[in-house]
Amino acid sequence: MVAMVSPSSLFLILLFLSIPFSESNLTTDYYKDSCPHLENIIRETVTSKYISVPAAAAGTLRLFFHDCMVGGCDASVLISSNPFTKAERDADINLALPGDAFDVIVRAKTALELSCPGIVSCADILALATRNFVSIAGGPVYTVMLGRKDSLESNISSVEANIPRANTTMDEIIRMFESKNFTVGEMVALSGAHTIGFSHCKEFAYRLFGYSRSTPTDP
Image 1: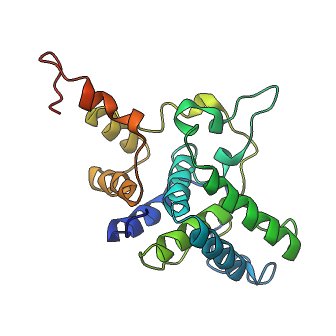
Image 2: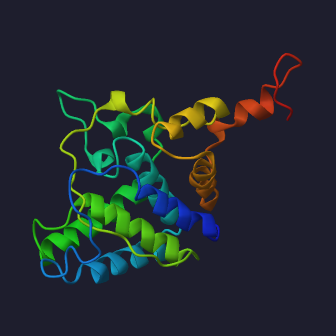
């Protein structure tokens, strides 16, 4: 079950907006004329998904995090591998990204293509869907700036140095976020938003069952 969203979750999304995006001018009414039903379509898609799979809220928030931390919020995590290039989504840490999170983006994109074909980027869809999931799960409603462009590239090699793992040291995490111009306080807010969902046992089982006098972890 998905937990209620804390105020820090809003801070999380607002912080994502400070990560460098592809070259474009972001505005609140970017699709006002070209796709006026955008917000309604995203809202209906997200609401339907949440009713059937509440955990999709946490999954989509995590998907957004994994996208934004690698090269900015450009939907590069949605790109599939091809015979020539292994994409981000095939990195070991991304293999557990929930299928329901990808599914809601595909559903929203499909609906938008029927309404306003070739207009709305997947990057903006992911940003809006995440905002709506945060809100419907108990968090606040906030404004999302729009106008992101989708990346045409996605490389598995760019993931490892940008996504913290369960066993990453605090010094390493701080340096990782500092490289993106985040303060320690902002890092805590971004990391704390993981409490909306749950963790896979393999991420922390070694801390429970691998204890010995020679390890620093107390079970």
